[in-house]
Image (cartoon, rainbow, N blue to C red; front, side, top):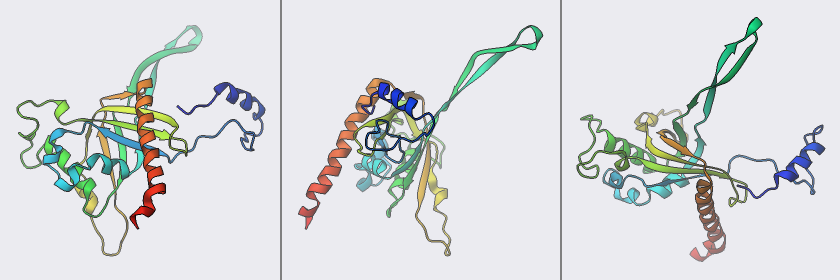
Length: 236
């Protein structure tokens, strides 16, 4: 999490009850902003490389991370159980928790269609669209989730990209769409191709170890940025 004193926020809040204005050099409460988000797949299926071009397979994790435009994480809704007392007075207790079990990610597609190749190959590996069965190449003789699912880390940061604000780990992840239908074309329309994929989620984790893992990834991203600034000119 971003290293901020919540006791300081409490003091600032009482001073801004009227204005809701959090500006000035002495402001201690920095409003959160969106747009600084990152993803990292961990444990992509070993056999996925057999279903996508060799030039993409070894770089699949980095391609998916770099092409991520937006993420819609799963949320939850807690229902309530209502009771009626004397005179029609009502009260309630917590009921069923309905947690979302999918995460939606929008990717920017590139020439060569690496996002299509990865998602098409992943779906084909799980269910061949000609036979309707899982591939016999999926890790030998055993059909089990560890052979076709992955883990996904998602985190948001402050604009310095090193302070993690929100962190999540999604387990049991696999795509729910082969995006062939997104490649329609019209001679009168020229534009970019965004590929939005919904992924299944079995478990969502938000424990401290998730934050620590994402902080490590965030440091790697920051190092990449520093390298670009310091070493880009050496290519000329």
